[in-house]
Image (cartoon, rainbow, N blue to C red; front, side, top):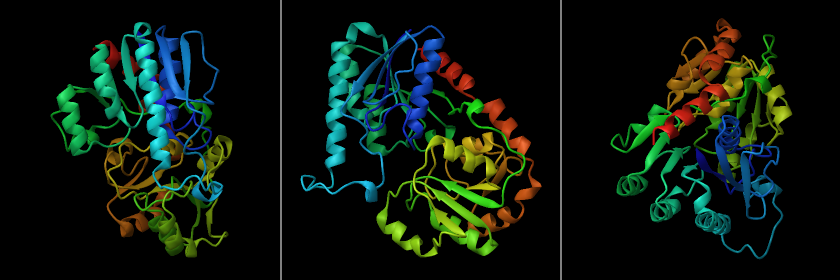
Length: 354
């Protein structure tokens, strides 16, 4: 196949720090090219050049849009409106559209990972190119209506994503994967809890912090600040000793934190599409305690690779019972269900069915 993979205009591929979608796009391009398919990868400037000859890279824009937290960005008096980053992303999406037009004879199918998928549907129809949209985020009503109008082929990353809008043109469910060789297994963790994710109300770091306080456990929070007001609410608990927030970290530091954590907390309040951080943690042998929202029960095996809980009080109980679980079961679960090889095989199978 000749596949145009739309990776990301927001972050380079793979991302410098956080960014789950960008990792998936990276492994799509690398894995499908290694199977002999010709790939054109569209991604933000600064993307890895470490690809084989079957991949043509089209760099978009001037670099990462969303790297760094709000505190790390220097004040710029020209940025007078809060929508500047959104407007800049639309500029870059427009550049992608023009490249798709210019290169129309160089690919046969479009595999999209970019948010802002709606802008690509008319151009794909005009070019008469099959368009497959990977749903890294959840579907909402207006987008569902657009998908119906364009008869868009959709790959979900969990079955839970389909529940609200079951009648769309779903092509396959392809679970995210991780390169388990990059996530060393550790059977002798240290005595702390870990949560990785952007600081925001929907991620619900507040419950993780309060649970650590109640159980007397240390907690490490990793992630950029997405919601400053929410961070101000929980900041009073962050003492730098029992409760630490260390911002965004590089890949090597994140691996050390994963493998040495006693448990990974994921008390999300939104309908989680997948939760890549959960399989990253389990790859290292670290069990996950997560609220039962969205795809959680598809990714975890309750009472084996973690605990699927309904509320805060159940999370407290699960923390106290975490040593009952076998860390090798977590690793085995990822090896059997969430590898890069399985993910790429499933993408190939889905695209070949078009």
